[in-house]
Image 1 (cartoon, rainbow, N blue to C red):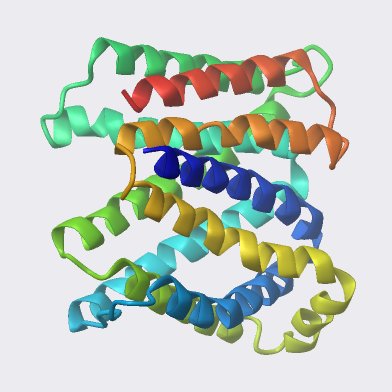
Image 2 (tube, rainbow, N blue to C red; image 1 turned 90 degrees about the horizontal axis):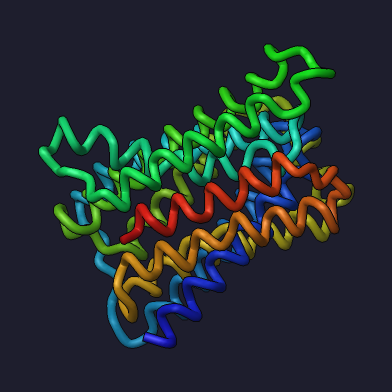
Length: 286
């Protein structure tokens, strides 16, 4: 179990780290997305070989058929994150987008799948509501309330894509028994193909990102797959509920990074919203 919780913590740190770095390159838009997707794909193939040493990766027709939908969801997620960070702080967007996703999975489950929520999880849902309210009305006396609502809307959109790919990928791996590593590799390569098509007339801009943001692009190429893979392997060594709870600490690491690295303001409302979101995720994981 110690190994699993350690991997979950590494996943949490990696996730907070890559979100911090995406903020730094967000102004470059789609070319920056293409650059770190390309770099990640270059690393992904040998990483897959190393990670699966000793057992064969199963590439199946089912995996090939399911991967394009996952690719579309993950690409939409990355695009929304990139666009949201271009206009708003990580401290505004990250707690809500990360915290709302499990709520969006849990609440519909009550009616759609007849999965009742425990009292603890209902408290978690309420705490996420408090977190949303704190960030929505942040400095509302001096700022236009409509502007305060915009990061909440972007965060909600990001949370919807997180919930969608979480449910879909879980169904693909658990129910359809698709090989996780093969599935992840195919999805990543498809995403690179889509991104290349989208910026086919701006390839020089994408290549230039390696010169302008060398360290950020390379680090993103490592942290994005790492956050996913550490989380994947953590569930093989520890209960999913504990893994989810430990991974929720990414909200704390992201808040620290936003303040210390990005020099974002550490307002009381953001601290309280982050604490409420962490508590909500912990309760939802029970």
